[in-house]
Length: 191
Image (cartoon, rainbow, N blue to C red; front, side, top):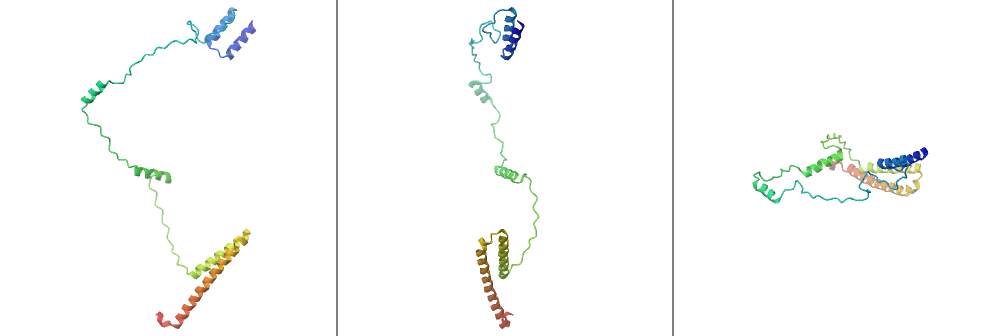
C-alpha cells in the first residue's frame, strides 16, 4: 500500500495537476476508495468546469464624453482670445546645415582655420629642360620594368617616346643656335 501511495504521489507531481486535484486524489487513496475518473481543476460545486456561464455585458456611458449641448454652451460662454500659434523661429535650412556639419566633422562648432603653407613658386623650366626630365623619367621607368621582368612589354612605346623627345630637343637646339647666330651678327639691334 505504501509503495502504491508513493508511486501515486510521484505520478501526481509529474502530471502537473493542480493542488486541488492532488488533494482530491490523496483523499481517495487515504480512504481506500476507487480513484475518480475525472477531477475538476478548480473547486466547484456547480458542476464541471467546462460549462461556461453566460456573461452579461453592462454598457456604460464613457465618463469623459460631453453632450453636444454642453459643448455648445462652453463655446458660447468662452471669452478667451482665439488660439494663435507661436511664431516659428525655426529655420530648416540652417538646421540642415548644422546637422550636416555634425555628420561630416563630428561637431557643429566652427573648426580652427588651417594655417596656410607658404607657396613656393618654382621658376618655369625651359622646354629643353622639361624634355630632359621627361627622358630621364622614361629611362627610370624602363629600369624599374626590367627589375620586375616586364621591360619587353613597354620597351617599344618608351623608346618611341624618347626618340620623339630627342627630335623635339634637336628642333629647339636649332632655333636657339639660329637666334644666337642672329644676335652675334646684329648686336646693335638688341640694345
